[in-house]
Length: 260
Image (cartoon, rainbow, N blue to C red; front, side, top):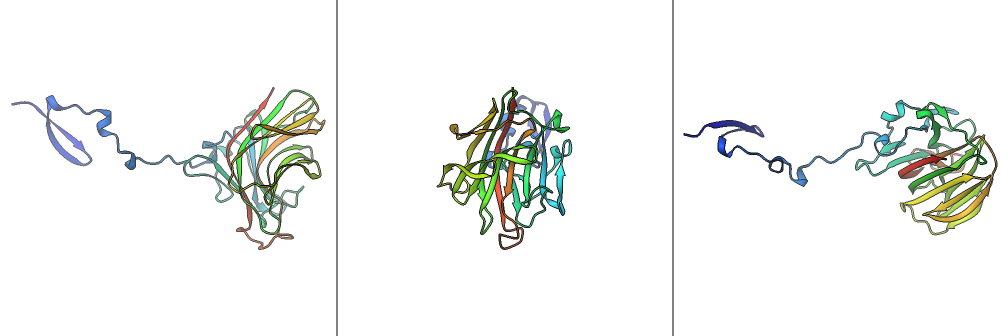
């Protein structure tokens, strides 16, 4: 009489022949519909945030929440900064009633470029080397009355140098205080993903949209850094209702920085 082995599968005990005791990996793999979906608890599982810090529209007056490394690696704060459940992108949101920094009247949920694994603030020169930011993102919500939102920027010292700025359906690349320096499109639809690229060097910054060259910003300075996220250009003084439902939001699926 053949020997038998006792096997427990899914809580059921069965006696099977030793000769027939072969279980393949395929036999115990759950069917596609039974598999647990991949879930991302933190935005750092979607984007490489090693050399970034985060500013949120929360905290005290003119003293917003800032999250630096290593804490940023395991940080999430819905609805302001959160990974999508399918791990495809990160949502950045800033409401008109949010806390602002000391140098701005507008709230933000935005990344600021850092160095050395997030230990120090980046500050590079447009006349030394080449510095590139590439962001894949989509504007997904705009504030009421003043539907303006910045999704990516080159910042220098105490002021922005150039940004990708959406005003309603019109997407602009700015030059300092000239917010309408270059029109990329006047027919942008919320939710449309695109690639924003800044390439800085030789005393200038070239801006690209979906791989297409758009404009050049002349700028010489040595205190520059990249920023990206949702920088809402509205507040309770110019946009109603004054609450968290009135906000700007960006969906970001990729961000990379290179210096050479």
